Length: 352
Image (cartoon, rainbow, N blue to C red; front, side, top):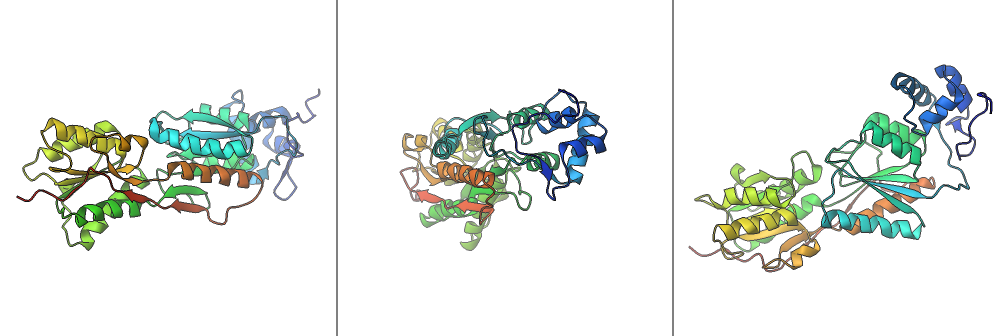
C-alpha cells in the first residue's frame, strides 16, 4: 500500500463538520503522512508529542469529526471509568451500567484511575485505540484537550457524580445531594437533637460539599447555630468516619448525633462509639448516606439516605447510547431523588 492511500479505520468516509476536511487534507496541512494522522486519531502511542500536538491542532481548527461506521466488525464497548473503586458503592454503579449495556448487547470495559480525577496520557491513548461507543466517568473528569479529542472521534461521554462543576453542555447524572443532607439533618432535629455533627467526604468533591450545605440549611432553618468544630471532611471510607468520630465523641461537649456522608463513614463512627463505651443510638444517633446493603446488617441497623446508585448508572449508560446514535438528551443534567430510610441507629437524645 502506498503512503498516499488512506488506511482502513473501520469508519465511514471522514470529513469535517462542513465537509471540507479529510485525513488527506489534515495530513497535508500538518506536514505529516496520512498514516500518522490515522495513528493520532486511533490513539496510537508511537507518535512524537510535538507531532501529535500539531495534528490535534489542525483537527480542532477544522472541527473535524469522524463518522461512525454503519456496520463494523468491532465489538460494541462502553468504557466505565472510576477515579477510585471501593467495593459495594462501585458494585452498584457497575451493575447499573451492565443492565443498560446488556439491552444494547454491548460489553463494559472497567478502569480505575488510582485516585486521580484526570486520566493519564497513556490510559487515554489506550481508550482512543479501543474506539468505544462511549465513556462513563465516575467522580472523574477530562481536561479540555481530552474532551476535544473524544468529540473529534465521535465518542460521547457522560459524567456520574462529578468531582467538580462540569463544563456547560456536558451530560451529567447525579443525585439530590443537598436534599439528602437536608433530610438527614431534619430527621435528627425532629428527634430533638441540637448538637449535630457532620462528617462528609473530601472538600474537593461537589457531592460532599452539597451534603454539608444541606446540613447547614437544615440547622439554620431550625435556628440552630452551626458549630464549625462539628463540620468535618473525611474520605468517604471507614477510617475517615472512625478518626473524626473518635475526636468528636471524646469532646466534653460531644454531639448527640452525627450525620456521616457515607455508610462506610457511619460504620467508622459506630466503631469509635463502641470503643469509647457509648451506645448507639442512646448516647449518639448516627445517620449514613447511600443505603448500601451493609446498612441492613449493622448493629443497630443504620438509618441512612438512599442514593439511587444503580439507577444513576443505568441512566448514564442510556444517555451514552442515545448520544452514540446522534440524539442529544432533553436534559443534560439529571439529579435523581434521594430518600431517607429510617432504621434503628437514631432516637431522641438522652434527657440529662
